[in-house]
Length: 241
Image (spheres, rainbow, N blue to C red):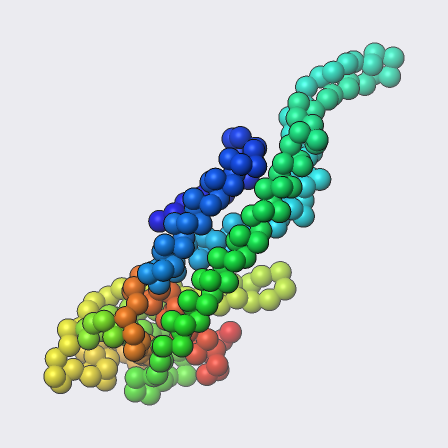
């Protein structure tokens, strides 16, 4: 996976051409991942970097205050020490501004590309309940099946709520349990029955199946998008969101 340091803008050599080289190398690898529909973790990483450069852009004055200083003079009469910055704003802040000005549209372009792929994959997913859904659907089973494989992947899921300053956020945690190989008589209802039979901790589980009519990478695309689809579906059905 392509990587870019969290502090790539301000660490080491603050030079526009050098930073441009780092950024374009990173984005080239991201694009290669996207070409094979491997969205994650690259898309989430892109968004994180984009937010970071926006934060630096909006806080450049504060950033300037962080540059190291050295003692210049001591005003004994006024009992005051006078410091000077080892790096001046003219030397560095303009270069940082150039780096940020260049990088923001680059990140935006690749994020748009990633979101278009996300929406394309999402449009090829179908979610449906398996059997009767209990009133409490914050935990249960996610059955995942791709057109590339007739086997069914089984995950246990738990929905959680995060309290932010202004709103609540829904999160989901999944744990892979097992794979049910395809057989002529294997149905999603049978899989649910087997799970209830052998896993007594969830005697009446909410169970949903997400199917894809196209082949996509499981870990890098299908599973992350299926999880988000499940969260929205549960919320739309009256879950605690």
